[in-house]
Length: 222
Image 1 (cartoon, rainbow, N blue to C red):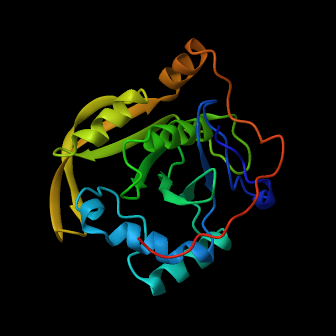
Image 2: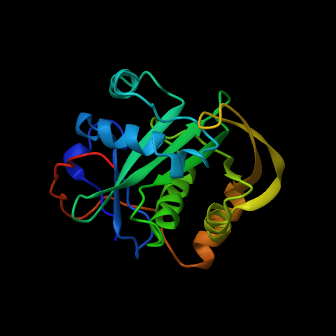
């Protein structure tokens, strides 16, 4: 299942648990992740479908970005690194909160070689739980979580629909890969729909893991 790395739990929700059949760990980024994150954001097979440019694309930018995250200076971005239960880097997912604090966008990228393993679905479900759980000083009271998918990326659309997101229109998004606009489909998951889906399935919100998860180093770049 999706475990919490309790060695990271301090004043911020660094790691979270999602649905009971999950097989990934979500935790805050570390300096050891920088090369992996930059590779994830710049690999063409992934970059061509990115609708939300929240990950840094150079090591210098990544170091500054991580310093701001660690200093809690980026209140509008809640990033997580995804690993499997053995500590292998799987991808990254971010919750990007609007200025009003009422809506946030989910953006997820899965490393090539880890596709078709249900990781994106598990991560999105866990982040939706995180976003809509009882608010405290770390989690604003969100009404809606949104997602954008490139119209030619059917796999992304299938994942967000599987997670309960509802289609709400089309639009355009800036692509760093193409240095221009790409057509997108928009999706949204309202708190009421999330609540109904969770309780219909008989699932409870995430809770801390019963025991700490061993921290493993992540080496190399994609």
